[in-house]
Length: 152
Image (cartoon, rainbow, N blue to C red):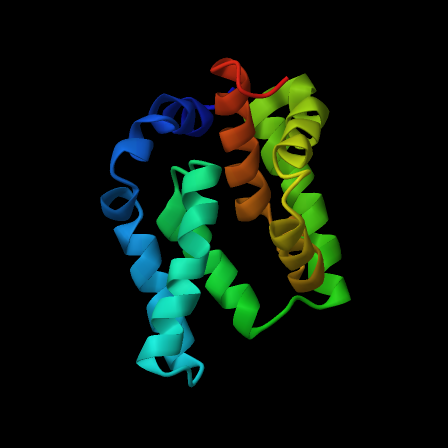
């Protein structure tokens, strides 16, 4: 497991106490991205608020980078060529982070979000489910959940 993953696992459950503070930067990213794409301030806040439960539910420790990636993909979905490149890069990243357990890490990430139809739909339609940063973040959250006994 990489140092990034260990760090993610260490903070995984600490953020639940004050998620608004912990994920404040991510909320601002979602909100400003929505405004840039012609949402009214009220709509932008609603979009940002809509993502907060996801950040808290999966206790995403790298929430600002996660939010930046999601915001980017909301505005410009990936092409087929980009998706293929991300899938290759994701394999490399997971192998670097998890070594010969990369496949298990990916399955754990998939298991983590298995019952979240809204998130799964977004990941599939936007291409975010192939993005190395998104997969890496969800894999780290899954690893922490497994370490804490919350992922069977």
